[in-house]
Length: 469
Image (cartoon, rainbow, N blue to C red):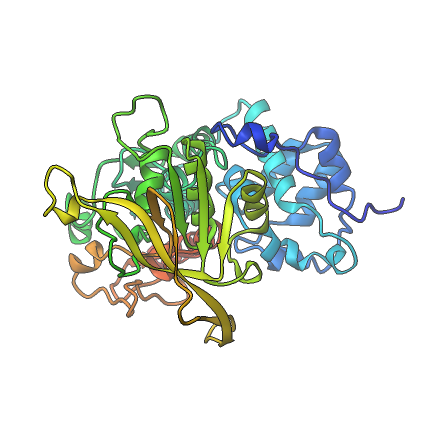
């Protein structure tokens, strides 16, 4: 049978429709499409795609199950390696990980591994009523700080081994960046809740509204009987540009903007959580978070949304699929330009109150690409006398985040690097005995699947440590 050179397209909402709602954009494969896509897999003996997966899912095996129509068995294969398959199938950058290693991709388009993973997880969630059984307790207690992808993965891995695991989450809902950072139209919150419920069935306890470093310290967790602690607190501290006007009303970090919309439901009519709606919006940055913020602003009623990025489209770090969706929805990309000042006027009731002024525009300067930087990307260089002004009412800064220093500042002997990331060994161990860390708290902002990989490594290391102890 001849191999289809292209992967099956993902059915989606029409751009003109989806740009005005928060329903999921991608609609998912049908059973027929999933089987047809699975049949493109060459079932390579060396399985290079597995090495491209940070959690080492047995990809050829689960795809083989799909070929045979055994969707629940395919889910069981994935679940041996991943605690969050429905999440990963939606938001992981498969094009630079497993699919980039696909042998079929040498000549044709690679197998749609991510789309197949999503199909399998959704099929299981829609058809299976069986909950996993809580394993027999081994008598050991472990605390996990943060319920994002690294924390949930670590908790799930340990729970399957019989550990009594408690996850401490600072916000009022479990899921970390999965619920506050990723919009509903890309990752429905019901999907995250389902994955969390699966972990609860394994015996994982989740305590919300607990800020480690304020409500409790890591030292106090040990006093409470926990024998090891995993820190997966993420990187929720937003970075700013340090340009004039960033204190004006209408300037948000992407974290704040997305949290208000996603977790605090500012997108509903007459919300209790206020947010700037309508008008013209500029999003500064070119990553996935910038795409999420821009597309969210559009759905909140913005008449025009710009993405302002200092390099060209070729260097844009966001996933290709997200960029294509943004362009289809009418987002305007202002490339090779960089903000130098956010313009505004003072509060008319108090002209001297500059901090409470409102945004009226953003002054930018045009850029050109020079020599490569330390990461190999061509460095953007300002072009003299090329300033221009974009007429906007809202500015969203999306240029990255750093780990919050709260845990470092309240934990003696915990070493961090110059960027605030917790320093760990290859097995996730910090400079404190029995304290492990992973995900964005270590690396700074990264991908969901890489955070999951770190959580998986740490769970294995904690098990070895407590078993030997």
